[in-house]
Length: 112
Image (cartoon, rainbow, N blue to C red):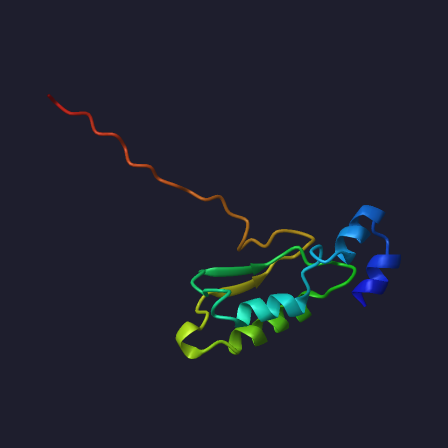
C-alpha cells in the first residue's frame, strides 16, 4: 500500500523519492522488529513516543497496536516498563507539551 499511496498520492516528487528509497521510510514492521529486539532497543526509556505518523498512509491505532505487540514479545528480563505514547500529527498532546526545567547549581562565593 505504501508504494501505491506514496507513488501516486498528494506528496511532492522529492518526498515520493525519499519514501521509495531504501532508507527513506520506516515501516510499522521495522519499528516492531526494533522494539522487540533486546539487542536493539534497550527499553530503559521512561517514555517511548511514536511520532511523525503519516496521515495519508498510516493509522495511529495501528502504530500503537504494532508497538504494543512488539514490546510484549520482549523477554521478561528486558521488558519495557515505561509509557508508550503516540503523538498526534495534528497537535501536541498535553502530556508531551512541556518545557524542560533544568536547575543549575548556584555558585558559592567563598568568604576568604
